[in-house]
Amino acid sequence: MQLLDGKSCSEKIRQEIAEKVAEIKSKGDRAPHLAAVLVGNDGASQNYVAFKVKDCDEVGFNSTVIRMEETATEQQLLEKIAELNSDDKIDGFIVQLPLPSHINEDKVTLAIDPKKDVDGFCPENVGNMSLGLPTFLSATPNGIMELFRRYSIETEGKHCVILGRSNIVGTPMSILMSRNTNPGNATVTIAHSRTKDLQKLCLSADILIVAIGKTEFVTADMVKEGAVVIDVGQTRVPDSTRKNGFRNVGDVDFDNVKDKCSYITYVTGGVGPMTRASLLQNTLKAHQRK
Image (cartoon, rainbow, N blue to C red; front, top):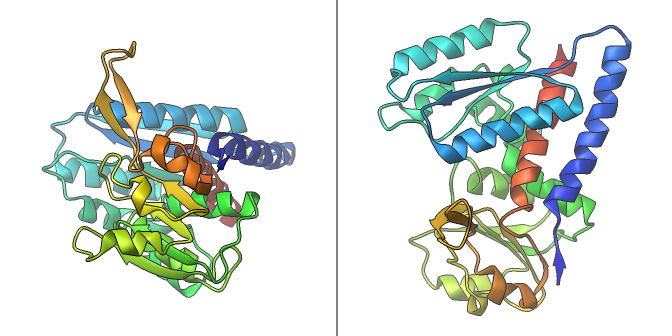
């Protein structure tokens, strides 16, 4: 078993981006600028945005965090998005999810200018990705593809089972894995809560990508020997033995699954850092397009 070290890979990507930013600045141009809109006080979201600001500082980007109260209306958020769309000093921005329940996430996603949609969620960018056209790739799926690329994991002709069909991970992941690219060229099956014989299906997977949102859902009897397992899940669960009172748990029962795998990610230091690295790559691309 080899651990797929997203933390180490993301550090290399940030180094590569920092070199490009230094070159941009040496020519007298301004640095790329990423903005993040944070609505409410969700602890995980605040931590994630703080990491993004830290990443920006490390590579030489400018960054801005716009904080809005939990009680902010949908219209107020849409007006803020319109401001960011028209701000030439902002190359790309994200609206951190999840949003408060009174705000329609689909409406918010549709309001973002596709040219600044560095999360890769807008229909135009997803459509371009489906057609293999230049675009901003969805951050988490692209981060996983980058892991495959940098670890030289063979995907061509492999059976890839994706647990979860969200617009953020499962669906775009299936598109990238099935495209005629390297990595890619896999035979892809998307499974979900209504899939029959799920255990049998998972056991047929050469590559198992889990983004189902249920802690330790994938157990050892669902994974075949030598499979590549990517755990996208991350849930905070109470843990009185930890100083902060919680621990992060993935969608895979890591301790019991790891010895069956050829490669596997861990819930911390796996997919998360690669998602953040993809966001930086997309922001740099947005800046270069200008």
